[in-house]
Picture 1 (spheres, rainbow, N blue to C red):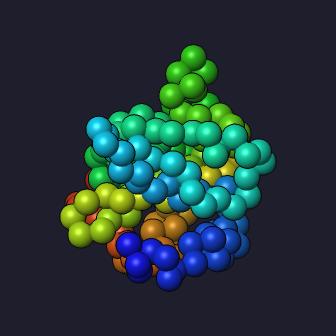
Picture 2 (cartoon, rainbow, N blue to C red; picture 1 turned 120 degrees about the vertical axis):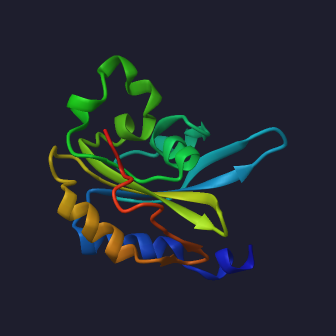
Length: 159
């Protein structure tokens, strides 16, 4: 992963936060263990706590796990309406960072998802369709050693 080491993820995330006027941005990267894939939040900007460091997600769990498993972006305009308080423990980054509106995209290396980039707001209805499109355009097709690609035009999972 030499390309990954040469790219300054923190600088890219800080710039993206500024450009999108986001409250929080996180990059979760795959940790390949002996028996499964795990995602950990490696780079963040705008965090209100350090609890993100303890989050370890497996494929299909949490926002990052779901995007990782499906390879499709997720956009949630109003988290309080979409995620039940009783189910919030399944979405730790949303709970810990008090996100009310967010979007997440998969980052690929080859044909495999290697990371998830999450942009969030602490106010509802901030991640509109237009803002989500701006986010994807701003990230573009390259993010360091990774690339973002759309499988189908309207394949975002609306939650």
